[in-house]
Length: 374
Image 1: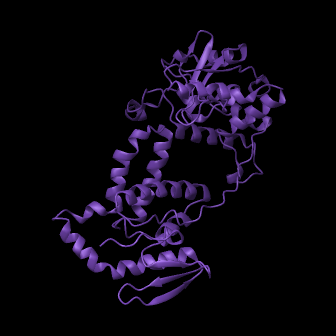
Image 2: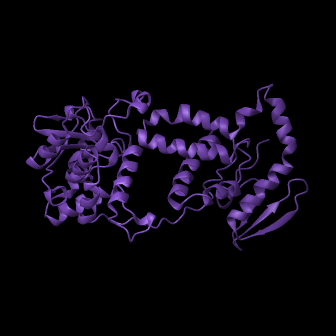
Image 3: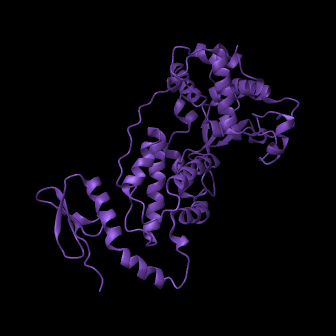
């Protein structure tokens, strides 16, 4: 006989835990004799305690389940095993950007280390909370969102009764990084190798993200335009397709990107010989990885010493060039919305047509960056 459906007030609570709506407190009903125990008003503590008690009282049920599995290995219900399934079967159809997958890979390593040898139905709120508390607020919120999705899929397959990650609280992220100054970015650029100078100039003139800057190719420049498909928003926004008019300002930057290195990418470099094997595993041996760009920019910033009075957390990175670019466009009285790729009404046609006929958002990158790039 199946158990009665839980009332609205008790939905989302583990078995045997109930909310006393009149008092706003929780109470636990011991399944062996029906005796009640008051658990107070702290929801997270009550859920955590109830789950731990349920594991003890349901040990017999675990033995029955092991027999009903007809000899299949209990390893199938381990968190690590389900995480493999999540990576191989659930993520691929989403067609996530490489940068997102790289970030997920970092989180997956943290998850495997924290929950090694644990059954997916044995992971408690406290276990998840301890993992999140060990991370920075931004990393914790990223990990929490990913864990919520993982446990949602596991619960949908009947592998766990509820979602322990969803019961944790998100962290408050305080933005610590400051914005670039014109003098600061100029000093960084002077300490940068040629390819990084080109990347800085391209970021200033187009206000694009790191991923999109590194993905720009010479073949994307045609018919007087530079065509860019923003990786972060291509599947989630209607403003991901931008057509930059090749203005004299943009043409000058593109021309500086051409050199004697045979590369399809505007931003490229010839790797050191000792890393040639690693380079061959990339899309192209001259392509620059996002992490390498971040490190190179940091090295140039440290060498410039332009933000000496700021803490490490306040030091602006390559990404903050985008903010400076949009600020300068606004200061010059120009339209920064289309430059940035922010949503516009006309671009809804891309979704109405299912991208069969892509409608490009025109942008005019005509910012005078000579003050920084002189």
